[in-house]
Image (cartoon, rainbow, N blue to C red):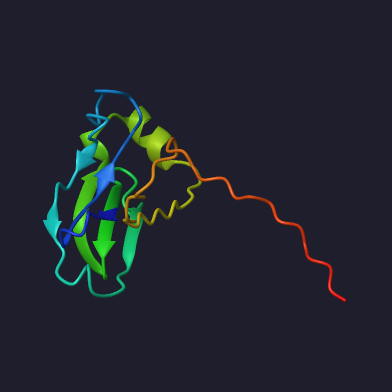
Amino acid sequence: MEDVNALSKHSTTFHCGAWAGECHDPDGITSDLQPCGGCQTGYHTYSAIIDRSNTAAEQLRFYLDGNVTFTVNENQVSVATWQEAIDHGFFAIFDLAMPVPTPTRSAAAPRRRRRATSPRARP
């Protein structure tokens, strides 16, 4: 789940790790870009909920501010892929990318050397 590049759009994606496999990684099973009014002007709540209320048809639902924005159904991938992707503990990665000005001097540019000075003796 991410708010994408100050576009006032967000995206959610289900990855399962197999390059070009069932989940079409590296793209994954994705919502594509969706409108996100106000994403640049305030705080928002992003959630991912695994619904196991029907064990024959589990779902992974993505929410933005309490509203469902995208759903991945268990039957979109094989049982083995679903279990490998869902049936374990999770952790959150918070990635805040902030644009910064480009330095005017590159790391390779020569730097002026400062001449060392010694302290003056004071009476």
